[in-house]
Amino acid sequence: QKEVEQNSGPLSVPEGAIASLNCTYSDRGSQSFFWYRQYSGKSPELIMSIYSNGDKEDGRFTAQLNKASQYVSLLIRDSQPSDSATYLCAVIWTGGFKTIFGAGTRLFVKA
Amino acid sequence: EPEVTQTPSHQVTQMGQEVILRCVPISNHLYFYWYRQILGQKVEFLVSFYNNEISEKSEIFDDQFSVERPDGSNFTLKIRSTKLEDSAMYFCASSDITAGASTDTQYFGPGTRLTVL
Image (cartoon, rainbow over all chains, first blue to last red; front, side):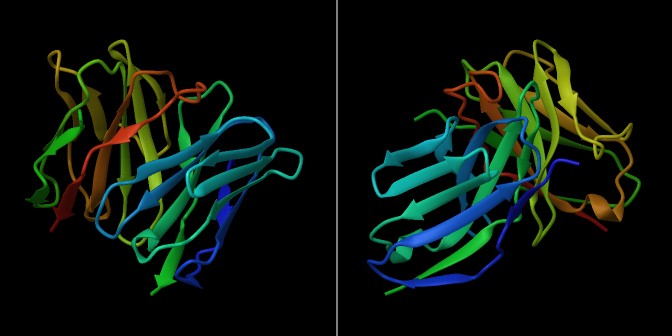
């Protein structure tokens, strides 16, 4: 059974701080990793995708992937109140079309 | 900016009734997906569709469910005989690249909230 695990939170950080979100997955045969943001009552919105070990930066967001540890993380620098949302980690396994989502981590950024 | 649209935004139905949820993917996309999210729970993959056939489906997607691309623009999810536990938000997504490819981005529609009474 392929699974994606996230700490449900909530994670609370002050405005301007770094928010660190973590995700682990169950199977080494994974290929693609995604972070989505979901505001309450809205659909998921892709923030970052990462496919190889290391860091990938896009603006205030950095995704980190460690396949040996089966671990992927998302750092949000200079957190803003508008970043308050649920962050979903998602994984697609090699050869498949199925995206497996974690349960999400709720992030609160306090002004 | 192109976007995925879904209709209706909210569907209320009686248990045992058939419902059809409609999606219009982004026009040049070839890969289509349905997901559902029960209130307070995780997003769950239902099915992927490419070249007029199902490419993968989850264990949730049983014989009660079917998908169709009836014309060049619509992508539908049919639930033949709804159950109380089918109440959820249903999201359609589309992509122009196969799932997991290095430039894959799935664009999600706003969702249809299905309530089964």
